[in-house]
Amino acid sequence: MNRFGNLQGCAVDLGGTKIAAARFVDGEIVRRCQTRTEGEAPPEVLIDTIAGLLSELDFTRDESFGLAAAGKVDAAGNWGAVNQRTLSKVKGVPMRQLVEERIGSCLVVNDAAAATLAEARFGLGHDIANFAFITVSTGVGGGLILNHQLHQSEDGMAGHLGFMSSRYATELCGSGRHATVESIASGRAIEAAAKAAGHDEHDARAVARAAKQGETWADSLFETSAAAISDLCGDLRCLLGIKTIALGGGIGLSQGYLGRVNRHLTALPLPFQPHVDTAKTGIDGPLVGALCFTQMAHAALGASNGG
Ligand code: BMX
Image (cartoon, rainbow, N blue to C red):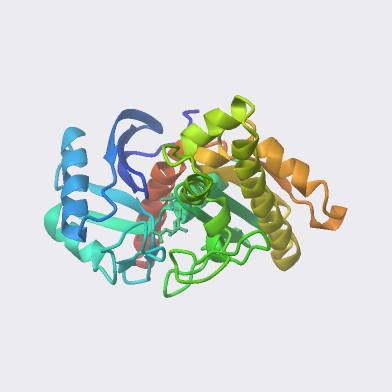
């Protein structure tokens, strides 16, 4: 059995830091390319970047593709950044329509929701009725599987776990809310805290290296990030009875981060401790999930047409 079942076609993952594209053949990624996300770019430039990546994969208009994007995606495929500091010109964008005009047929889904689908089908959430995915990356995102279904809301806000409140946070978040999990635990938050501590040449990877080399200021930033994520896991346990949570994203998957989260979790009373492990679909989760989402939509359409 191939790693990702029978997935076939192209997928794009537009995250806060990078835009990645991949071509799947019979459940395996056979080609991939990526570029940096220009956070200040207008939507049409971001769409052009997507078009450029897909052309590197010899995508043709008669194909359709799956697009996972950071931001909220409503039922009509309109796309808007919740954290305006990450994608500052993405507001109420008719993304599905613009992409179809510029590139070809595509379905759009939030990137963390896509990774949730991927993990439910090929990873930690397989065959589990109630499951959550949390990405710790540029932001903190998430997705919920409730009764074996991806939980979605009309406006695309459902699953935005990074905008829950955190007792470790005090700052104004890019979402406009104060003291969110994202504002203390995300890659951007770690970078901002490093800068505030006088280490302004450190991105999150550099902070991780410093922590590994025993720098206590860097270690404490990751410790606080992990503590906020472990609180979020405890919240999901008592809010939705979720017992299994997958952790993804560049920071969530980084060496030692899961151990930090689980150490904080063991400080909670047992009923608040879900099982937390790293996402088996890894950094490819959003790409895999974008195609899963597209496959599910086409199957549902076929069924409703009596196909
Ligand atoms: C933010 C939000 C989510 C996204 C999450 C992870 C924006 C632009 N992003 O919470 O929609 O899923 O970050 O995004 O509002 P990533 O770029 O870190 O993968």
